[in-house]
Image (spheres, rainbow, N blue to C red):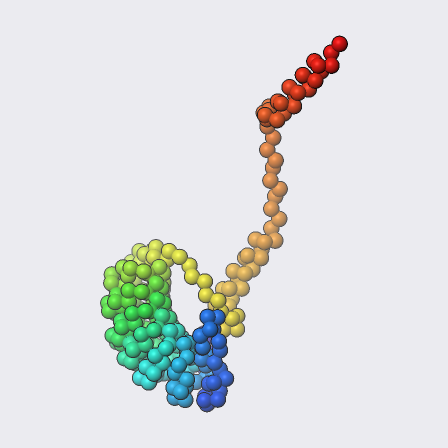
Amino acid sequence: MAKEETKGQKEKKITLKIAKNSIRICFDGGRRLDLSKMGITTFPTCILKLADVDELDLSRNMLKKIPSSIQKFQKLRWLDLHSNQLEGLPEAIGTLQNLSYLNVCNNKLTTKTLPEELSLLKNLSILNLGLNCLESVPTSLGALKELEEIGLFDNALTIIPDSVKKLPKLKKLNAKRNPFPDSTKQEEHADSIERTETLHLVREKDLCCSCLKMCQDERDKLNKLKNVTPSPAKKLSFPLLLTPNSSAKDNQEEWRLRDNRP
């Protein structure tokens, strides 16, 4: 759906001035270069002069290739390339040792075009490979010991290797809608790994149509729950139960009457 949105866009030529004006400050003080949704078809080489940014967002464009010069972004910890037309990733991506987040969802990646060098990203904690054309998962991804979340949904997978399923810090594995021989068992396994939920704050305008509708539906459900008036709690009554204070009060009244007798 995101790809359809970019098809109708006219490509915008990215100049260094435009790139500089597209830098945003993150919550933690880092710098994000946001060039998403600009109809870009080729990697803008001018941004290599801004290679000291912490985050790079090239999502929702029409990129078919990421050049080896991506290795110049050595400070990069967050790279978003989702919803493009990428058919492969460069081997040089393995040099981005500070990278903790990589999203290449909704592209045209195959198992053969995933470089082995992905396994060199030792600090990677979130990897999204969903909505691609993967026939299998490289066992080398088992080297990503810091990985906490991995998206493998909507591919052509028939098995997930144990080296990935048994990663020590893995909390969430989404492998839904793959042609597993025993899809129920595989999806149950994926659900069992989903131990915790992570909250990601994004702007509403950055969501695709399907994600936005899902969020709006959840919001409507919450609003309905808030509008339900709870029934008043029934006050419990114990008529035969005497409290210590009530007994003491009766005793005091009895002694007062006795003291006032003639």
